[in-house]
Length: 537
Image (cartoon, rainbow, N blue to C red):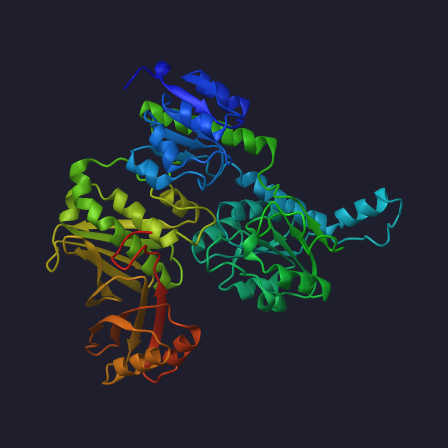
């Protein structure tokens, strides 16, 4: 490696002074703020690292031009403006300042709660308009009130700590947080969102933004809330059905709302604007001097670690693995991720512990990368930030989830097998063929073999003739093809059926199948796979 003083860093967008100073103490640093896209492409070749925020797009073309590039650092959370696959193919580390704005977002949530409780925004507007309306804007105390939190990750937990300090009772919903973490924080665990709606005077949203959570808080949700409840959203704009929110605010269902995020931003025209019981801010959750300074310092530290051979804790692409280990473990990475996703889908969340057993040839290598990949599958789409093999274990630790890993050199039926369990649910998988397609080899303790696919269904049913035909009839009525099937007989217990299907099974078909006599349990699972051949998402 070249002497670190010879390494060159290009700062493409404004960065906190402390972060710039940190880099200048170690490397040659140039200021590229204000360079046009064409100028960046023309001049980026000599640089070993680039630091960006959100405006600079690090595209495949950019990466091709940056022939010396070793690391891309983003001073913020997420890396949506970086072509991570292109960087990974070149062996370039991509890192960010994950978690740097969590405290600011939590404090802004509390600020909106207090603004709602004490009618700060309308009282301010009235007074500056020349109206002294003291009696009109009397508020409520938050002491003794219940705060409901949907999404109990890092930010949700910081909000809970502060709310309890204000004397609030806190109830939270997040099936991907261990029971012990709720107890440690003095927070009641809600089994369903409906339990939060029924109990809370204030509700705050800190869910991940996924296709499943788009419009999560809708007309049905508002109808289940306590009359006069107040909604706070400093999370993601698309979590709330805006039209339904406006209806709930104008018809008296809700007492008010505090909104910092919108489905499309910048947002300067919304039906929420002008409603007397709404306070809005222009996505200020991370907009504090401390958060920006923290992001600058954190990304500077990460870039320096990448350039000097240190540990890059916020890298978002796969860390280096030796060629021998990768030859053995690589084919199992998609299987490990799909098994993690399948386990949590079947279990409906995560127990305090995920047990992981590796058997066969893979135990000859360091399996920590596989375990991290299991954690990615288990948590992705269920936490409030992107999950990767670098941060997955720390995100699990934040939620009180631990991994109990065991190994066995013996694998009688397959060269290598990964078996996962949480609560009373277990799944096992291996790979087959020259393309190492992920294959499910057990479920609920029953041996069965079926290739994992984007759309799957599992049934525990009485071991009597005709059960498979009944499922096929319902699916056929809906135009859903059964692609493959595996059955494990009951042997005195319930049988297990696993099928892969061509499309997502409609809700009404799911209910019809569950209603068939003899079916004790049914799960319909959509795995985050890039294709039907087991490609990881």
